[in-house]
Length: 113
Image (cartoon, rainbow, N blue to C red; front, side, top):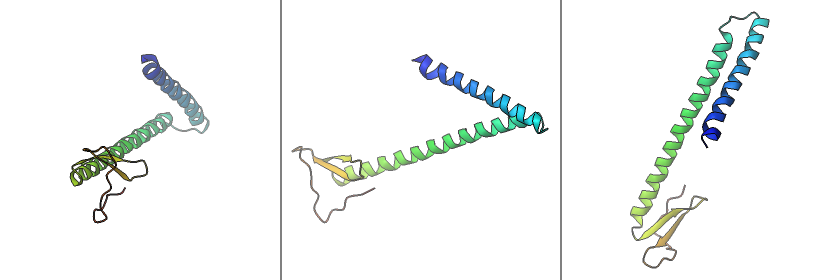
């Protein structure tokens, strides 16, 4: 498991970086670019990947927080029910005392995603 999830990805990334370095170095020497150009391109690519990963992580945290808040709001609105969000965004309410589906009255509004 350590090899599959740790060693192999690191070795793959190193091989990819070495291949990119060699290709960019050959291109830089053919086009008479500075010697630091391949390093700048690789650093920019890695920084872009890190930035996108951080942004996606932040968005996922915000989405999970919003979903938790909506879940808590529904649990407070219907204290005698177990609350479950369905994949289509609707809420499924189960009455705790009977175990049957709870149908809210027409006056109650159910949050929808």
